[in-house]
Amino acid sequence: MTLPANELQERFALARSMAFEAGAIALRYFNARERLVIETKADAQDVVSIADREVEELIRSRIAASFPGDAVIGEEYGVSAGTSDYTWVVDPIDGTSPFVNGMPTWCISIAALRGEEIAIGVIYVPCNDELYASAMGMGATLNGKSLRLDESRNIRNAVTGIGANHHVTPAAVASIVEKLLDAGGNFIRNGSGALMLAYVAAGRLVGYYEPHMHAWDCLAGYCLVKEAGGWHHPFPVQGDGLTKGSPVLAAASGAVNDLRAIAGL
Image 1: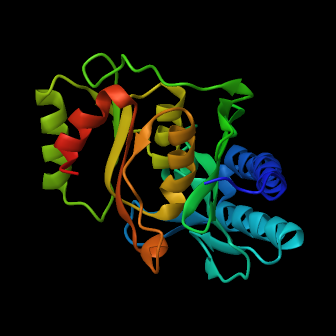
Image 2: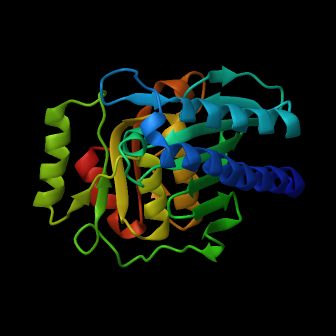
């Protein structure tokens, strides 16, 4: 599908500028996190802070100012309806648990759909000053350098990211890890699914699997992986699919079949 160049490029430019601006705010909070008020959501491991809310408010305000007809879905403030073909999908800080515990593995994740197509995916990692950026048909970059996945990499000669949360039973996670290790693979988990998807696009991980993720955690990463030459499992974007969550799997071509078998997808 070909998108009108100007409308896509303008939104792509906005996504990148918002990521830097939002990242600067989040980094200030991160560097003064001892003063943050932390709240729990679904369980004691699912946390939120004023930083998450302020970053999402900033992103929403920038979108409203530039493209008032666009819809927005964000982790902290839910759905704002729009009249255009575009829907922004935002996680203001993915990896809030690492964030509040002083670890650098958190990021700003900004995606945009045009209709049912993932048109834009931008992930910014403030602690490392890394901007992963992609748009439909424009490729993927890391700090301006083109990303292209190596087809020779697989689960046995590279590392896979695995995610877990309160939606998934401990037994299910243990089974995934066991299957991966039995197949000759190895794994990491860094606390941010969005960041690990960006790592797939950059070739740092050969794949990423999480049995249940929300759209705001994965759509930007999905765009990055696809534009870098990888594959991802479809995410349901029709109806309430964007708010309910789904299994997430993305990989370089050499790991797709193994990881689909492990995930049962």
